[in-house]
Amino acid sequence: MAKRIQFARTGGSEVLEFADVAPAEPGPGEVRVANRAIGLNFIDIYFRTGLYPVPSLPSGLGTEGAGVVEAVGEGVSHLRPGDRVAYAQGPLGAYAERHTLPAAKVVVLPDAIDFETAAACMLKGLTVQYLLRQTRRLEGGETILFYAAAGGVGSLACQWARELGVKLIGTVSSPEKAELAKRNGAWATIDYTKENVVERVRELTGGERCDVVYDSVGKDTWETSLDCLKPRALMVSFGNSSGPVDGVNIGILNQKGSLFVTRPSLNGYADTRERLETMAAELFEMLESGKVKVDIAQRYPLAEAGKAQEALQGRRTTGSTILIP
Ligand SMILES: NC(=O)c1ccc[n+]([C@@H]2O[C@H](COP(=O)([O-])OP(=O)(O)OC[C@H]3O[C@@H](n4cnc5c(N)ncnc54)[C@H](OP(=O)(O)O)[C@@H]3O)[C@@H](O)[C@H]2O)c1
Image (tube, rainbow, N blue to C red):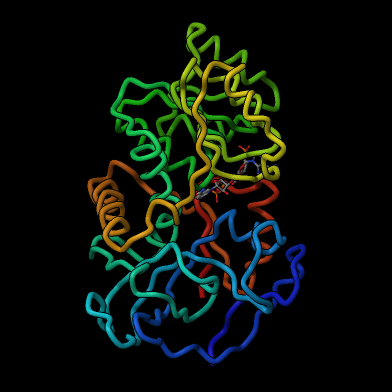
């Protein structure tokens, strides 16, 4: 038997149970990973609350982890028992001592990257890769607005943007978070609890505004974000931490300056093993060269996943959070 976090109904963190389950044998094309560290992400909260549907209940939770391959199913050729690996996608159930998932979603870890670092940045770092390098390929010289700049995804985005020569304006909710974002390479920060985001963006850019806005807050910030864009610029709406954006009249893109909008996800970008490997190689290069560092600011035992989620949801975390099985 092995421990895992599961939930039989959606709701608050109290629905999470720490249960004993028999780890699944890997079927064709699958592997079983003995997790050494597990990543905590906002998307886990969307599944727990029911914002995103789960295939069935009771359900496991979590999609990100790092550990050692302990069993390999038929037809898997790129992984062997004993390999050090990491993953960020696949069926829910990463909040567990052992997790069985499609081998195509699992990559071999370079020796220089430890399990905790990998679990803290696979999902968030691959997300930053596609946001900054694929939704639009930033080359340097652009000005961007990035929400939650002191958070898990945001901390990596600040460093990656600095490396590319991109001016990242980060939103934050406290002076401490502003300081952290600045240390990570944000060109400027806006404390939205005290400052008007649109006015500050106009001031900082001499009235020009941004080439791209990366908005993970959703419902509360949609229109503010559109007002921070130059004509014909790109709005990347990639999260719902305040609730989903809905009821949008597409004409608003015309009114705000012939804007482009995309609502991307990691699964839409790392949708083949080849694409995942290419994106992971770029992330690992950023880590191994020290251009991007992962700040694991919170660690919780796996059994306390609910407490960890409450802290993330309550804006009390910075950087990445991991669970230790
Ligand atoms: N589409 C994708 O592929 C993808 C992949 C990964 C993550 N995401 C999204 O990216 C966002 C960041 O994820 P993360 O796991 O790294 O979390 P995080 O940024 O570490 O934590 C969320 C942060 O969002 C800010 N926030 C603003 N409004 C909030 C609200 N109403 N409730 C809670 N937090 C709020 C808070 O920072 P302040 O206190 O500074 O405002 C909070 O610390 C999430 O929205 C997530 O869904 C999307």
